[in-house]
Length: 119
Image (tube, rainbow, N blue to C red; front, side, top):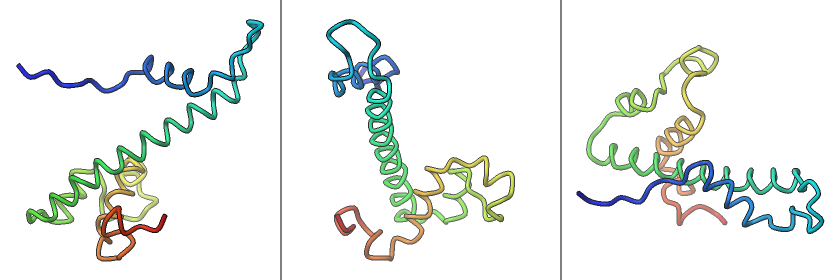
C-alpha cells in the first residue's frame, strides 16, 4: 500500500494561522487580536482556493486535450448552459465555474497558461 500525504485539516490550518500571525497573541495573556487572526485565515483560505482552481483547471485542460466536449466537462463540474440566475447555476460552485470559464477561453493569450498571465 502506498502512503499518500494527507490534506491539511482544520487544526492544521488553524496552526498555520497561528504561525503566520504570532504577533496577534499578546504576551500578557489577554485576548488575541481576532482581526489580525481573521486576516491571516482569509489569506490562507485565498491561497487554498487559488490552488484548488489550478487543480480543476489542470484537469479541464487535460480533458479537453483528450477529446472531451465542453458539455461533458461542464456537466462533470456541475455547470450547465442556462441563465446565470437559474437554480442549477446558483448551486454550481463558483470556483468550478471560474476554472471552467478560464479554460473555455484558453485561446486568449492571458489565459492560455499560467506563465503567460501578467504579473
